[in-house]
Image: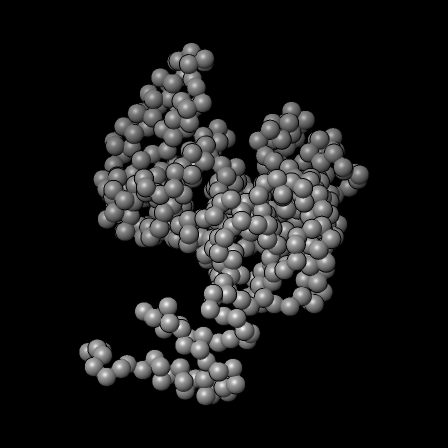
Length: 454
C-alpha cells in the first residue's frame, strides 16, 4: 500500500478506497554467504546493545535498536533477500516523505514485536528515492509502500498502521490466525500486548461452531483472535462473560469495551459483527487511517470538525448518539486545527477558512454530502442525525464560496480558463439546451487561436 498525505485524504473524500500497491517479485541468485554476514552483523549489534548498562539505554536507543532489526535493502541485495527468504515484509520509503517518517518507527516496533514472538518474517526497508531503479522494478509507485513477499511472490498489505496492527496482519498471513491461551498467566501476558481482540471460548477446539470461528479469524486482517477452553481464562479476557458454554466476544479499549456476539455461528455473520463493532463510538480521523475509516460497512458518516476543547464538550452527547444510531451512522472527529486534514473536506462545502465548528456528513453509497447549517449544539446535532437516519435531510450541493459579485439568487456564472476575474452571467431563464449551446459557443477556439496538430 502506498500513501501520500494529500492523496490519501482526497481519495477518501472522493469515496475511492485506497489499496496498498502490490510489488511483484523478481528472481535472482541467492548468496548464502552474504546472508550469513548480514545475520552476524545484526547479532553483533544486538549483543553490543545488551551489554550496555540498563540505565544507559534511553528511549531513543531503544528505537534505534528496533530500527536495526530492519534490514536495509539496496540495489545489490534486494532481489536476493526477497527471493531467498520465505517471508519478507518490505517498506518502501523516501527520506523527504513525512508519512514515511511517521510510519518508520511503528514498522521498527512491529519488527521487534514479531521477533519477540518468534516470527520467521524478515522485515526490510528500501530507500525508493536513492534506489529508484530497484524501486521501479518492485513497482513502488508511492511512499510509503508496504508489501509482503511469500516465497518471492508479493501480496498486498491491507492492515492498519500501528505497530500492533502490523504484527497482527503479518501473523495472520504468515503464521497462525489464532492465539491459544491456556492459563491465567498467559492471558495476562496476552492482555499486556493486545488491546483489541476477539475471544472465543470453546471447550473443544473442534466442531462446526469452532470451524466458523477459525474461518472468520483467517478472513479478517485487522483484529487478533484468541481462543481458550478455560472459563477462568475467558473471564479474565472478557470480564462480562455470563456463560459457561460456547462464547465469542469483542474487546476494545474504547467506551464500548466489551461486546458479546449473539448471532449465528457463521463466518459471514461473525465478520459482519466485527465490521459493525470494531470502530470506536467516535473515530478520530488521522492521515493514516482514512482507508480504515472508509472500509467501515456504515457508509453514512457524520463528521465533526472542531478544536479539541469543543470536541470534549460535545463528546458525551456524540457518544450517546453513536449508541442510538449504531449500524446506521458512523461518527468521526476531525481536528480543525489540522488544516491539511480538515480543509480538503471543508472546501467541498464551499468553506475556505477553518475557523469555526462544522458538522457535516457524507453518504459513501450515494456519493452525497450534507451540512448542518445551524449552530452545532447537542440538540441540533441530534436533529441532524435523526434526519440523516430517516432520509429527510436535504443534500448539500454548494462546493465553492459565493462570489463577491453575486447579490441575487439563483445566479449562473461561467468562469472561463484564464478569465476568472470576468465571469459570464447566464440567464436563469435559458433552457438546458440553450445553455449548452451558449457554453459551447463560448468555449470554441477563436479565430487565430492555436489548433491541435493531430
